[in-house]
Length: 372
Ligand code: GMT
Image (cartoon, rainbow, N blue to C red; front, side, top):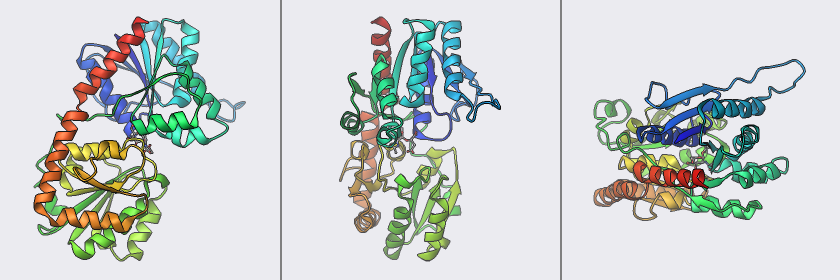
């Protein structure tokens, strides 16, 4: 097949999943065309069967905002015609599903559109009256729609008037990359041998509740000698730095900013903290699990579909930092329990979220869409 892919190419789970799926499809012999405003950050080098088409939105004095959505739709149509794409797989309903709809109107019905919902387009934008109707339209006009968890499917059905069936296809990790790595060379730079390392990775948006990470850590370190590493940047960063100072743990907390080598960072940690308020899936919890690292976090959204409660991690109600701290202390203080969780996580990642199995599901969906 000839497959177009549009996603947000910057750091973020949806861009990671879109790019890794494109790579797996290319490995299977399909021709893959990324159509994005920037090179997806996980692409970065030459891959056989993968093309990259940049979208440029020019600024004009008469427009207050550059017409990016129109430039994207137009580029999708150009690439579809030039390379005779069978389908465009867009990640996020707005604006991408709408742009793909426009491209299809421009080139003809042979071009099929597959839309994957990742969360924010439903749980945040779906509540915005200025966008709700167009999100519905984009979803209903797509030839197939997937969502990354059952929880997201339920929320989409509750919030929007959807006529199309929603297929649940979980996110995945490439286990050639996400596996327990030997990081004994760098671990001493972050913690003494008797200390544990807790890790949080996010874009520091309000929904990630990064202050809960700091509060949980402050309670854990009273009992278990430990360090906290935070990876990422975003609106809550300065508040989090401030809170670490106020709670007098700043010397044990390390803010690393944006980082690319997630598998190495996760392998460095003993525990991942993910106390989000909204999380349609929680890709980082899967990345951690695939490296043998349990998660302690909230039971928001799709997190319980990723983390096996009481098997590969512990989940508590959003905001319950006392419970999260208790669970973290329990896991970090009981070697047998920790090993069981770590091994169960490796198994769960292999069984449910293996890249090849998930790529099979997408490939079947693409084939159905193209044949109808
Ligand atoms: O979490 C974010 O703010 C980023 C966002 C994205 O666009 O990558 O993440 C969403 O998609 C990921 C990949 O499907 C999911 O793992 C995240 O749970 C989801 N975020 C939210 O639902 C808040």
